[in-house]
Length: 108
Image (cartoon, rainbow, N blue to C red; front, side, top):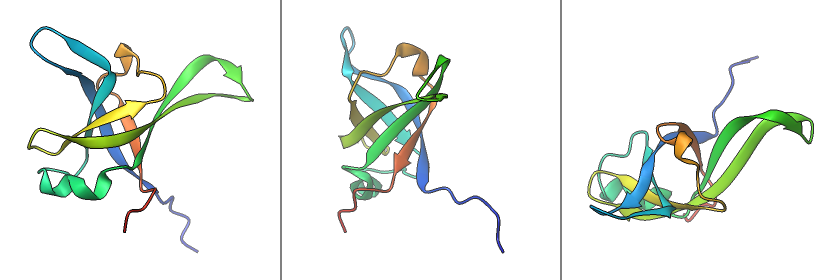
């Protein structure tokens, strides 16, 4: 038997918040997904769920791991970056941290 673990999500990075020169909008996060380099490549991922998994100091429901769920809403720029909305805004300490881009819901 093949006992290797299968990864059922794509890796992404939380790059920061949508912003202009002087204002930043914390309700919209910028996500860079591994392997997506152009705006044309972004179409497959639009609408996919995103999970920011982190460890908290106290246990809740028997686990120290917690998740903030979000969704990729649209592309941002021309280099394959996404805008995402999360149920609760991601904390600033999460900048540069990995996020999981789930391969559902499917639009195929």
